[in-house]
Amino acid sequence: MTTETLERPVVAAATRPSRRRRGGVERAKARAGWLLLAPSLVHSVIFIAIPGVMAVYLSFTNARVAGQGDWIGLKNYLDLFQDAQFLNAVKNTLLYTIAVVPVAMALSLAVALGLNQKIPARGLFRTLFYIPVVTSTVAVAAVWLWIYNPAAGLGNQVLAFFGLARSGWLTDPDVALPALMLVGIWQGLGAKMIIYLAALQSISPDLIEAATLDGASKWQTFWNVTWPGLAPVHFFVLVTSIAGSFQVFDLIYVTTGGGPANATNVLTFDIFTNAFERLHIGYASAETVIMLVFVGILISLGRLSLRNREDL
Image (cartoon, rainbow, N blue to C red; front, side, top):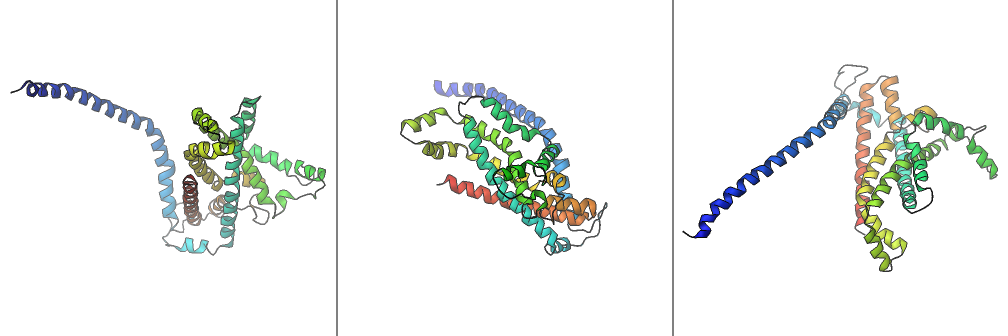
């Protein structure tokens, strides 16, 4: 028997305890991770998963205020696609999302790029852009109600200064929804700006410097270095923006109440009306399920679009 043969059991015996220790450490880390996740998981189950399952079930019933209601199958869904008010709410919600999300993302990225430079009072500008995010939507709506006041609002004063005709703003069916889109873009700009700003600061300056030394222009540096570095952030901002635009409610509730002539009636407001004013819980649940399907489709399309841009 060689010396090498005698040493093998000794080495194996020495490595076994260390492996066991590593396994114990990994299990301890896993337990600690699950413990830290537990509050969020409990919250998600109680306030997201269970209500979601209940909404799907109730969408197949004629439940009114409380209770299970009678099973009616797909009747709610069939009635919805013959409901002119629901179809109008879907149209308004999609228009709001398609207009607000890309514009807000582009503007927030532009602002983040500007505030990532060494400019005077940079911290002050970052704070000013972020203030609308932490301001109550009711307070924001009150300020914009004054701006959009047809008689003495700031909006019409600006139009008059440039010699343009006054607008009814929130009282004009053709202008009301675009006016609220402007508010949505303005209020959500700061949150997206902060996310993009953090992502920009995580991109290695060495990559920017290398591109500059290779003779790349600012646009080439942005497109070939900065933009790919922001790819995960684009998707996160896209998902949160789409979800936020589909959840717009308080702004509509305070400013227009879905009017004028249902011009600003969106899905969340229509769900609220059916559930808590008309007490059609099953019908409103069917609307909720359809809204979630729309959100999923738009997020998938957005992800596909971003992936195609990354491949260019």
